[in-house]
Image (cartoon, rainbow, N blue to C red; front, side):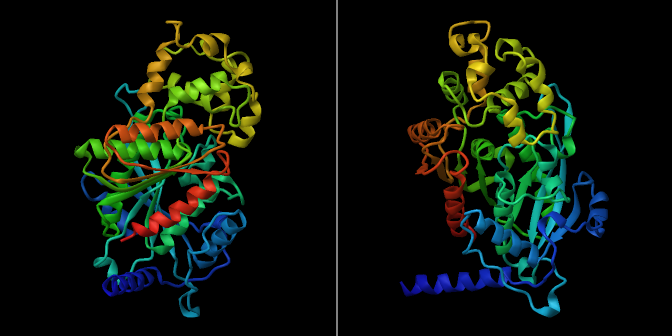
Length: 444
């Protein structure tokens, strides 16, 4: 017991050293200061195959991060245990967190052999002499669903105004705070947003496209860390809520079942995760009302405009949605507003053919295979896997996640499934609580 206590004290002391740093400013997160690219990028351009991997886009200081923390607490997010050490007056000009935009090429989601540009945000904690001794843990945190290009992480951190109490921004803010305690945090932009805006339609719920782009960006991020002089641990923390949970679990599965990627996972933590897309579609087809009315249509267009061009959209969507809704998914509409464009009644949006005959009509039953192909498939996981899900979630239904956890166990895997209170929106709060706990456990 004494030995354990001694180790705990030592690790706590080392963690405190890693996170101590100074700086104060009155900036807020919507005023992230822009900075020119330093000589590291010039050096990277001279290294074969490492050209234009990253650019420095700003820093976050003590006041900025303190504001983030206070706003999250006001929103009901449990971050009070994440302490920020107030800097001395003589070191107020130094940043707490450096914001890097990482870039890569990835396969076009239409699977025809072309490529698109993709981007993301890498948050680096303050660098110390002991960075040469200790390795940082990388957190990969793909965000929840967004439809507005300005809400891609690389755009948010370049000056788009943040909104208090917003579901999407709170997510970015929560994981940003983890960089204060010594984590390296990585937010990928999704294909169709950020640097790939207008290069493709966002492949919503296309697991292959979103996993491939995240892996390509991760490799670029890791090269950037090496160039910036950061050492990092081999085992990743991968986490996400809602769509982010879908990408996180699909990514972890790909890494663990395909050693050629050269990556490994220590912790997988997801919340509100769509797993069995066919099951979710069946529930939507049979329900009277939905909470997020555009989700399924967003997926249909993502499939149609990319890997599955043979989809006849009129077989699935009624008018005016069949002719108008693609233009609503052009990256210029904020999702809360977009949700108002759609009826809350599936019978108003989807054809009778889709609602009643998906499983029996051969002219549309191919959709079942598309949904099955892109669902998260159980695997014999090696990582620790934690799932949370609100029991009253009527957007990404509770039953779909619970059933997946049971199938994961049947496949020889292990998963801790945690039912929580709330619907899809409220359910993110207990996800944050578990994220705070498990991230701390897997820091060292």
